[in-house]
Length: 412
Image (cartoon, rainbow, N blue to C red; front, side, top):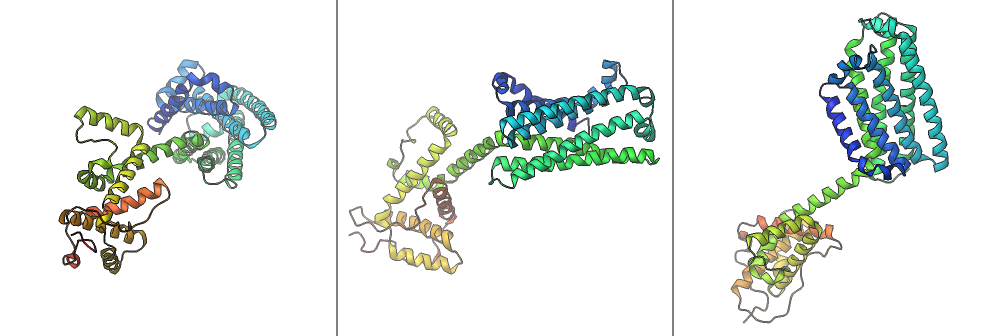
């Protein structure tokens, strides 16, 4: 566990910490961001100290036996204080939050002092013990040290759960609400660590070896802390994920609409805002780069160009044919938007065939069949359904073979 999960987790946290140093002056002016930065810093230090490569060398570096245990647990207390301070800044008015944070810092100072004192005094009877019983029950000082540490950690986790659940219940769906729920789940998982360690002490005093449960403690500490850290910062970087997902959906929609768009563009290149057939390879590459730079704009353009293409076929659309196709597809089980999209796609095919077969001339336009969505998302959803039915048509259905494709009142 501490040879793979710990270094990877530490690397993630250090990446966040170090990438924020260039904005550290701005962070100092915002208490919430400063608390979040200390949260990541404590997290990075915890899992760096817990990494086996560092853990096995810490005693030699410090000259204090079992100092790796002391350092890691002190860092966990600092981490718990950081997450609690961040929630206090969110939960209370600035003055009240400031007072509570001062109390938290004072308590943590007392706890760390007591832990270090007890650990050093227990060193002579604790660090040479190798058995599970002697490790967790070797001295009163060390048991007291562990009890203070676990009480502090557990109290902080319970408070995190309380505050997160309290405010998540009254919030509308958002990244912040999701983050609070995630943090509360992480804190609850972290309690497995507390329970396991308290069980270690009790079992050692009862001369029972439960060392096989050590992985439960490590997973509870590691996974729980990671989820809390992610949850408490999710509202900052979560919207970026939403924006990236939106861009990805737009780009996929742009690509999926190409078969329908290409049909109209081949028929009449004037529907496009620029003529791409005459462009060089370099020009097309530049267009691709501009697309990636502003997907929203190019998707909207594609939608407009497809709609313009549909309008050019209005003289060749036959309402009677549309009703015939609607009845046919309804009998096949299509309903609602799928039915409308299938009818529109078939009308486009029929209008293209009629345009080829008929002589050009002026005529009265027939109504455009299909819906008219009110926003871009609805428009894309609609046109993607039309494109799906448009590309599925490999041949004219037998039921339509004998249908006259020339619009009603055909062109002379």
